[in-house]
Image (tube, rainbow over the protein chains, first blue to last red):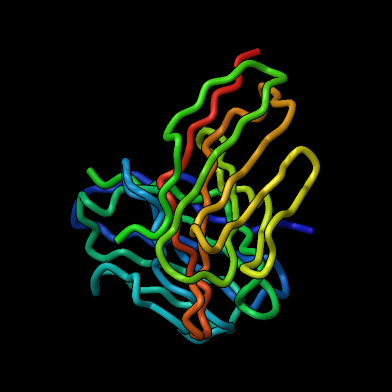
Length: 114
Length: 114
């Protein structure tokens, strides 16, 4: 069974540009999460989808971040315009069934904003 | 405030020795999960222990949970060089919500010397 995949693995962009990260969860997992780890800090929750609906987006830092999950399958996280402090590793995770189950993480996308 | 704090921050041991990492948290939880991250890679789920469990085993891993002390420990027995990684605890809060956002600790960097 394929795990959670994320694309791209690395992205280097200039401040002010737009970047879109993609996450493909494990097939059949209704729950999809986005997290990020900025340099030197802990991994922090961004938001949670149940199928195509946003269940909790309390961790989204500001309105420059937009997450979508059309059709309840893959998800995208767009940063527009990117700022220097957005640099970090963005992780996606998915889980099945009730939300209180194991979350399986993807390899992450390392974003560098110059 | 940070939910999970881990100690030690870094641990260096010889191959074959046991490694113990501790995690403390602040609020009532639904479950606690341990993850491993090898350098530059994604998070690998190791084990989940629910709030009504006190101990759980998986291969060379042993996890304990003491909800009265709001703490957990991860024991890796007979360590191997391949166990070298960062280890994170992550708590799922018990507040009756429908989401399961994980709150991560800062992690313990384990180095196993061959």
